[in-house]
Each structure stands twice: as structure tokens, then as C-alpha cells.
Image 1 (tube, rainbow, N blue to C red):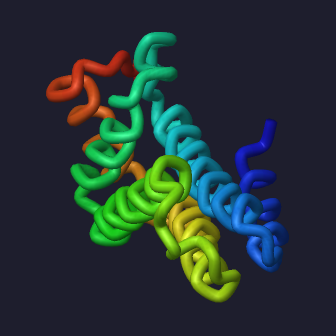
Image 2 (cartoon, rainbow, N blue to C red):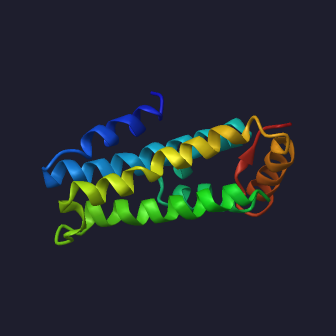
Length: 151
């Protein structure tokens, strides 16, 4: 499945007046952005084990790799992913929260996902991508102990 499909769906869903739809829009927006970021790291040669792939730690590891890439834009993406995940957690687990009753509020949250995706897609065309990729690979291998493909 193309993770970008998770980005278009929540944008459509966020115009609903149904609170369950609005909460689901936030959740899908986060997962769309997260999967694009994880795929980017896979394209950089990182190989998450099955255990890592399905555990809660992978969400942090993806953000840590981005934040240690030496790219200011990637640091912002990491921070935005953290915020979007926090909003996703609130939408999924705090059923008393009134935040997700307003389509306007949810639209504002959901619009963060395409911004994250756009930034990630620009990096591979950036002249500094090779250096960024090398820093991500070194950090993942040496600090996080994530398997990394040979160059």
C-alpha cells in the first residue's frame, strides 16, 4: 500500500461532523506521515526488524533518526511528527477530549501531515541528501542499533 493514500483520506474525512470520523482523520493523518517517514528511512538503507516494526519504539526511532540527520528541516519534521502522534494518541485514547468535535480544529491538525510528507519528498532531490543519508545511517547503526544495508 502506498502510504500517501493515508494522507488523502483524512483530509476528506476531516470535513465530517461526526466525532468518530474526525478522530479517525487525526489517526490516519499521523499514520500516513509516519509511514512516509519510515519508508524514507528504509530508502536510506535502514532495516527495522519485525519486532521493531510493530513495537511502540519504532515511532521514537523514526523521529530520532530524522532529528540526528543534520538537516534543520528534518528536525522540524521530527518535532511535527511528535506533535501529530500526541494528537493521534489523544484522539484515540482520550474519549472525553472536546478537541475533536470541531471540523475546523481537525482540519488544522490533519493539514500538518501533507506538510511533513512534502518535506520528506524534497530531501531526496536536495544536493545535501547524501550527507543527510550518511548521518542517518551512522546514527541508526551506531546509537540505535538498527540494521543498515551495506552502502
